[in-house]
Length: 314
Ligand code: RIB
Ligand code: CA
Figure 1 (cartoon, rainbow, N blue to C red):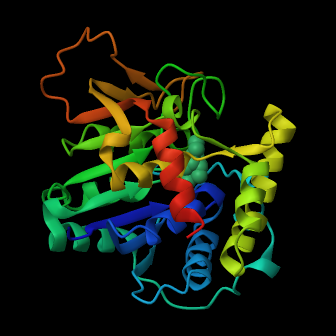
Figure 2 (cartoon, helix red, strand yellow):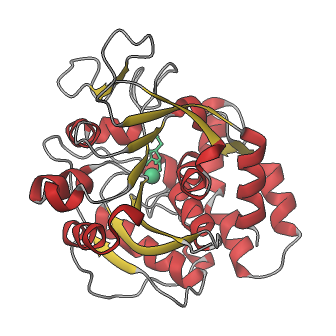
Figure 3 (cartoon, rainbow, N blue to C red):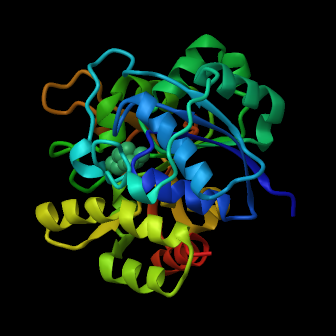
């Protein structure tokens, strides 16, 4: 089977980095481009982190790496360095290749070029705020609409948020962009906290699996995830981490990993207490015949975790 062409749009934090490793270790996917967006950390650091991961993996058929939005469409940028470290990869530079200085094309043009080139064969895996995708849609909706599907990690349907009580980080950072993408008419699959909170990897398992392998990649993964997991231990009481972004890549590999519902969903962007909240019509009060958005409501946790570990520690 020919590999599926994908573009990954990322705010290259720790779970993004694991998602990149999963993508490049999966023969089902062909990563044509990676575009960076401000979110977990500043966009320049996101771009540098992408290059570091590509060097760590020694990726031969290197994708385009393009740099995108420095801030959300309207609101000030909220970062998450307390979760991902000041550099976005757990602040362990000694275990990662030094970042290389290189020029990068712009993300919006790269997104539109890929939509034009690959058309409905292309899947965009968006694992950060949706600013770049919204800007591409604003710039040329006709071309953007050629994409096959957008898989976006974001939102919280029936569970508490992780950024304030009701919002998930990616959609909190840029609620206007999320609103635009979900209302663009493009086929979208939303991977919310409702399912990613079911996919936790514990520190002990990371150590067990990493120690059974030699080589610098397994050691680097173990090291750059350490602070991310310590954050969860300190704040939520478990020494492990959620696999938010790897699940979006997992769904690009095998959409059957999640059960989805085609319902009306939108994102609050003006609320005083509800900025970034996903408002999802799960009771189907509204006519959803025109909606192009599928939301994941269940995940085959065991199958996803098996795929994750089989590929991460390859
Ligand atoms: O809420 C989790 C999401 O926000 C993940 O994409 C994580 O990397 C952060 O960007
Ligand atoms: Ca992310």
